Image (cartoon, rainbow, N blue to C red; front, side):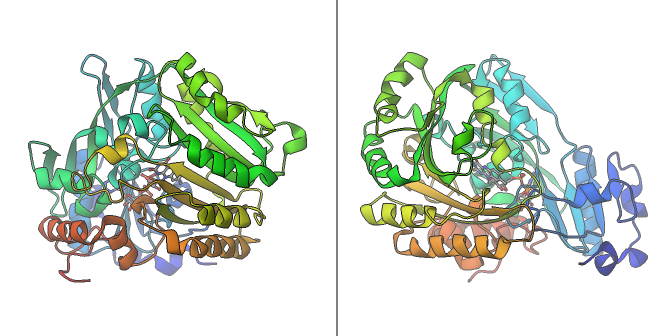
Length: 470
Ligand SMILES: Cc1cc2nc3c(=O)[nH]c(=O)nc-3n(C[C@H](O)[C@H](O)[C@H](O)COP(=O)(O)OP(=O)(O)OC[C@H]3O[C@@H](n4cnc5c(N)ncnc54)[C@H](O)[C@@H]3O)c2cc1C
């Protein structure tokens, strides 16, 4: 196994210029805290940066960017560290780590929130729910707000309120030159368009400002499970049922082995199940009427779709995707759950092996689709469903088999792929990044990249290369 000494050019690296006045922590391989700070969510990623600059504020970020430019070090930028392919850590380079930047300020009257780049989803939920407000973000509370937002942000409230980027009012950003710029609908509009889906390609966002929506504090939410044998019928019913449900309802289908969680009866633990998890962003009584037909379909083995705190629902998937397991993910969007798509899904679900491996199949549409495809850089607004196929193991043992299962499942769906969500990509190459945006928007993003980062300082991301052609 590799260790830090293989990659660290520390002998040659003079960090005095960076140290001067730096408010945060500068961690080198020999420093306490380095080991924890270099780890990312995906345990299969094991990299050793030469230095980790844990920034305490914007001035630290500017200093770190200028240091990177001067030294020519490879740069990784870290928000919450949840990039599937581990793009927020590198071997031998500089990690600009924003995780200490935790400021959050809610304005309950204006219904807005400002959040710094190190904030996690659960932290912003905690602050906003204190006022009965919510920022539509992701479904696991320990995910970073930064990376999620910059890619788009699909979420439990999206059919009513849209993506996370659809709430974005402004950003503060540090460019590759170390300059501070603001972007909003009325200032640097082209950059504002690009950061809403274009990832960290144009600079380091230090501060986000979002619009908030009234939600909860209690919502009707949670999953209903059936035995896997009922999956073909459940999915066919589901496909028709969601054609009639209102935008307040968002659903996610899951296929996995039932986890040994407290709310899951012991006899189900380890059994393959199909589940439909719901979240109704409206009055409880209305939600109960809407989900009734689903609850009455077939023979559910567990129904925990009940009124509950929105905060509890947001944390529901946390135990299923903990830090440190080995993960391999492939994703695609499809327009419809045709019979063939359902058959492929069930066929592969029946072959799930690891207790941690799961299919998460997102419903799309509603407010996400109503905003025009050209309004933001995010690609694939008209997708019907998003497949997130996740193979996971405790460590290296069995990982190759899970990865193979993921790849086979994804390949079987290939004739039905329409688009792909950029934040669900692994390290899959330029053509896939282009697919995520579509050719026209990809060219526009390239032009923006040439303007804001012509030397591609920020390249450890789903990289939009500044070159004119693919
Ligand atoms: C458990 C889990 C659950 C998830 N659930 C959802 C979900 O519900 N909805 C959804 O849309 N996505 C979801 N995702 C995907 C998620 O959006 C991406 O993994 C996202 O990149 C995570 O952001 P991060 O800040 O944690 O990641 P990081 O690994 O820190 O960063 C990801 C990328 O963004 C760049 N970056 C991060 N912060 C900044 C910044 N401030 N400025 C510039 N560049 C930056 C990094 O350089 C890197 O390229 C989930 C991921 C995981 C692991």
